[in-house]
Image 1: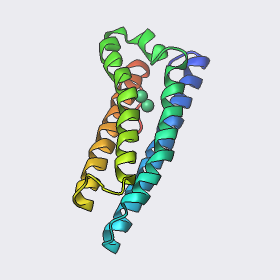
Image 2: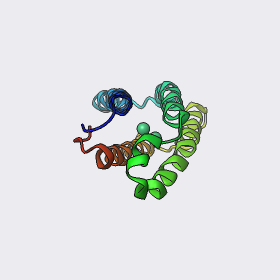
Image 3: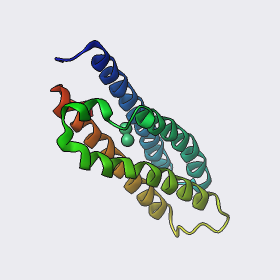
Image 4: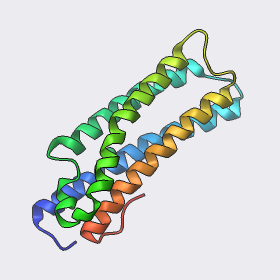
Length: 150
Ligand SMILES: [Fe+2]
Ligand SMILES: [Fe+2]
């Protein structure tokens, strides 16, 4: 990467964070597959498992926003500022959606008629989250010319 040492450090930190988050999501997907194979709904457990993810995300978003969201790459590629503003706006929505889903799953009268309904809702959220992370990685790539991480 052609850049200053502090830019390199920032880039490395951002990619480490990104990898850590993707690993957390992959572990949840593995667990969902196991539940699927057992054929037993686990509404409450899924609700419980969403709390650590929500906390992990809250830390991740706070780190991203700490010194100005995407400020380092945006200094090089300011044409992505509008997209960055949109991505920043998604942070609080993800946290709110995860909180709401976790609460729904823990209610005695679950609003989900079937496990498939609950799983689908959760997978929609994960897909949106993955897309969010990929778009951030693409802005880093545009700024620093490195292949992004998946
Ligand atoms: Fe983000
Ligand atoms: Fe991120």
